[in-house]
Length: 184
Image 1 (cartoon, rainbow, N blue to C red):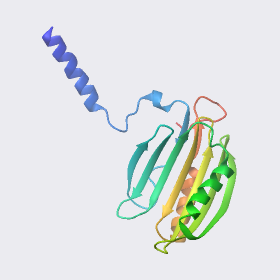
Image 2 (cartoon, one colour):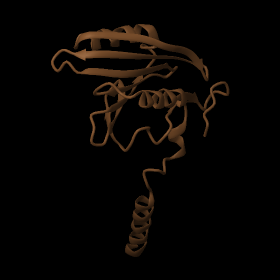
Image 3 (cartoon, rainbow, N blue to C red):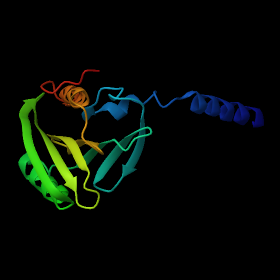
């Protein structure tokens, strides 16, 4: 009996230790999924994950810089109006700025989901630094997604282009629906 218990515990330990972060149970990939290409453009990024009762936030920080990519999934459909969300976000951001500009770049339906891409420019009240950001919001059926790429100063055009290309490859899919297929 002791020997059988020891063998079982050893097997459980071996299986648990052999699992890696790259190995995710298949059931995790059921339903609506945000697909982001990896690696992120521009260097080495660190990931920080925060969970809340109504949202999940992943902050990516460019190592050695103050550059940020923030990815937020708001659970539920209540935020599904892209234009209303943009107005609320712009209002909150503008309150921190001496001057603020927001420009709509694109609205599109991709893979059956409404998307909005816009850019903002801000001169900070306290530091008078010029900040630049791209924002991509996607209205899903289970959740609402927002990706915000923020630079701590004005980026080069090549960096802006790389991130526009990146955002064009981000997609929402749902493996429960044939009309919204996932690439995996």
